[in-house]
Length: 209
Ligand SMILES: NC(=O)c1ccc[n+]([C@@H]2O[C@H](COP(=O)([O-])OP(=O)(O)OC[C@H]3O[C@@H](n4cnc5c(N)ncnc54)[C@H](OP(=O)(O)O)[C@@H]3O)[C@@H](O)[C@H]2O)c1
Image (cartoon, rainbow, N blue to C red; front, side, top):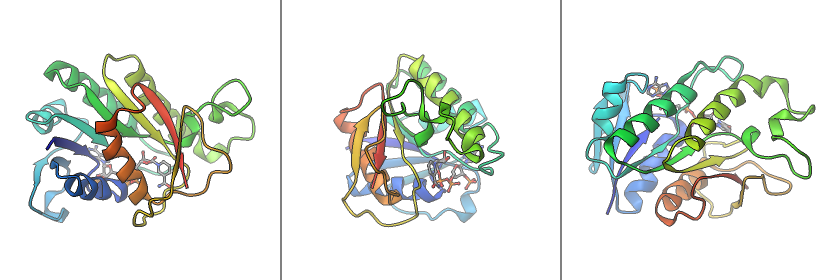
């Protein structure tokens, strides 16, 4: 049994990460900004705080074996810096504490384009509306890539808030062909399993329905 710190645990995907971690027999440490609105449950230790506060990040990582992250928030067109600075704080704190394994959630724009040079988000057809949030995901990826951690970056297309179906496809560094939306329950299941399996260490993963 592991103790996993979950970042973004109160979010749509983060809640499913908590479920998946408990279902796999792990215990959870969750960094939560508003504990009053977060469901208390056995196996989950809630640590109040903000990921932009390094002391809070230390508190929630102390005693854990590693972390999973589904940080997000803001508007797609104005995403703030939580994705990039949050991961920077997590990576720095994990390295300081001697923790190595981090499975984080990004987006499909940071995957390599298929049969073309560059990233999907660098292609002229990439939707303008996603550019700022993808830039945030990219900074988070670069922080992990430039660290010594054993990271995996799950990069999906749309992730509707749905129960796991068991039907999803994964590929290292690129999106599988003809991607369909991915139930975030499947995404959470993949991320928790991958934390232990390490099939995609130090890699981006295209994951879709
Ligand atoms: N939704 C999609 O279709 C889609 C598709 C591809 C990729 N993604 C990416 O997937 C990720 C998660 O998406 P989601 O829809 O599950 O997000 P979400 O429901 O908006 O959840 C975001 C989580 O991040 C937490 N958070 C935000 N700022 C924080 C801070 N300063 N300190 C601590 N926690 C903070 C939120 O906490 P609070 O509850 O306190 O706000 C919440 O728990 C995002 O990076 C998103 O860009 C989403």
